[in-house]
Length: 243
Image (cartoon, rainbow, N blue to C red; front, side):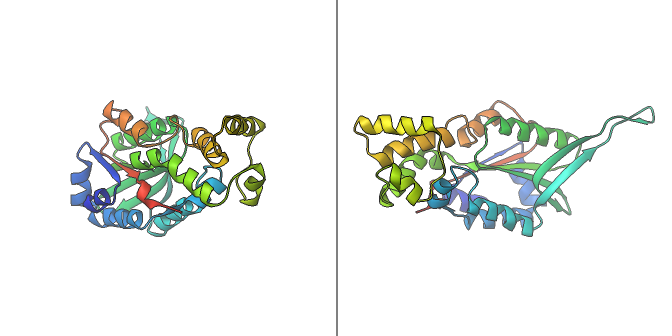
């Protein structure tokens, strides 16, 4: 079921019998997700142009999932004690797929601070305990993408002729702080090519180790965060980067 993703370089990790549940109870919904991911690409131009934020392709992935009925949903939980309703709690999930056999919840963590993983996993845990969802799914940057980002971005910028500050505006790159400009200038003064110096600072600031990527997610689930909710974790590979 997930072999096409693995063959395409995606990281795939299933926990607490999630793969068996998806294969038996949600074959159509799972096939939809796999199809969308296999067709997903990210342009380096949009990553850099948006300053590391969610690219146009990532937004289009969200829209295409929504078109297949993976839509935002807020789960409302009411607690009644001795006939009296207590304060309600809501759990919002970006992509929820209601099926005949149950409900799937999915979050895309393209580039947030890594504590968002705790929020997502604990949210899935609570919803599963309430029998509101069958499986929780998280899609994030995979290990190969995280490792490749610096080289791919640096190569793309060099290919675009980024050689000085004047080229930053010419290429329509995201605005930067004075501190970021000074850090790049200091590296250039030591003989580092401008495109390489810019890329190092950009990747360190926008896609550093404290952001949402595969190793941070894998570490949490290995420690049991989110248990006992069945979980499917998917890491986007460097192979989907274009440019």
